[in-house]
Every structure is written in C-alpha cells, then in structure tokens.
Image 1: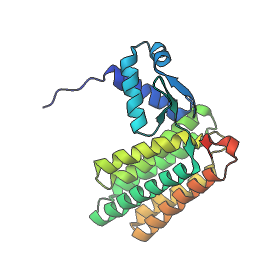
Image 2: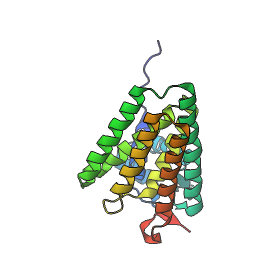
Image 3: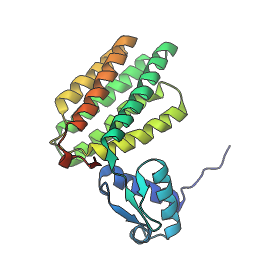
Amino acid sequence: MEALRRPTLADQAYEELQDQIVSGQLAAGQRLMADQLAEALAISQTPVKEALARLEQEGLVEVASRRASTVRRFTQSDIEEIYEARLLIELHAATSGLARGVVTPQFVDRLAQIFREHMVFIERQSQDGLAEAIRLDRAFHEMIVSLGGNRLMSGWHRIVQRQMQTVRNYSLRQYDLGRTRREHGAIVEAFAARKRDGVVAALRAHLTASRDEILSRPPEELPIRP
C-alpha cells in the first residue's frame, strides 16, 4: 500500500489560482505577479511560480515577461479548436462505451440524476445556484468521457473543459435554460435507448450549438482577443 501524498504549497496555490481563473475572479488578460500572489496567499514565491508553470502547461496562463504572467485571453480560433477536441473525445468515449457494453442502467440513472439536479440549480436563478449548475454541467460531460475507460483522454478533457469555462463567462442572463434542458435531455434519452447513431447525433448537436452560441455573442461579452 502506498503512503498518502499530502498536498504541497504548490499544489494548494495551483488549486486556488485555477479556481479563481475558471470562475472569472482572475479575468482574462489580468497580470499575475508572483510576488503579489505570494503575499495574497501568505506563502513564498517559489510554490506560486510552480503553480503558474502548471497553469501555463494547461493553457490557462501565458508568460508575459520574466516577472509576470497573464491569464490567457483566447481567440475565436482557440474556441473552435477546444470544441473540436471536446467532440473528438466525447464522441469516442460514448461510442466506445456503447460498443463495450458499459452503458448500464446504473450509468443511465446516474446521468439522468445529474441532469435533473442541473436543472434544479439553474431554475433557482441565483449566483450560488448558477455556480453549482456549472459544476454539474461539467460532471455530466465528464461522466460521458468516463465511458471510454481512458485516463489520459479524461485528463485532456478536464483541461479543455477548464479552458472553455474561462471563456463561457456565464451569467444568469446568458444561461439558456431551455436549450440546455432540451439538449441534455436528448443525450440522456439516447443513452437510455443505447442507440449509437442517436447518441452521436445528440452529443454533436449539443456541442455544436454551444460553440455557435458562444461565437455569436457580441465581442464585449467574451473575454477573447480577435
């Protein structure tokens, strides 16, 4: 049995900075000075620099100079590539799971439960409810990816999900409850029927509509660069 690994200061700094970037507390384009972050987190600069290096590898941070980094500002091309990656990973995982017979009644029940909880939190029309709805949206898609049984692809998917969340910049006004209910509901129904073509069509329609909705927003509503 392996000894449990305790999180280091670098791990803790990474988690905190990642949460602040994904939630929008640290906005796209914002400068990240290691000395200022270290002071705010009450730790030395070394673990902060390690955390920033990890976030750079995951595409959430860009190096601006020797002393500073910035929160990554995505381009429209970046968004298109992120959604292309999500389509490839999620469709592969879904079809692989169906082919291997791991889309069990228990899987469908759990996916449906996440879907129902997701709708409840959106309908609360509060910022706290919205934060939980976004977490459940991520859990819904991560569960689909788990069907592939490929930990490497699951890791890639988590990275592109986090990148996408920094761009989606959700607000209660922008969250399309009707579209989310229809499209996630169609995905659950397709998995329940265990029809490969239906699952592929429902997933493709949902991710394509999400991409197109983001790219159709006015520039001032998106933290992206031309």
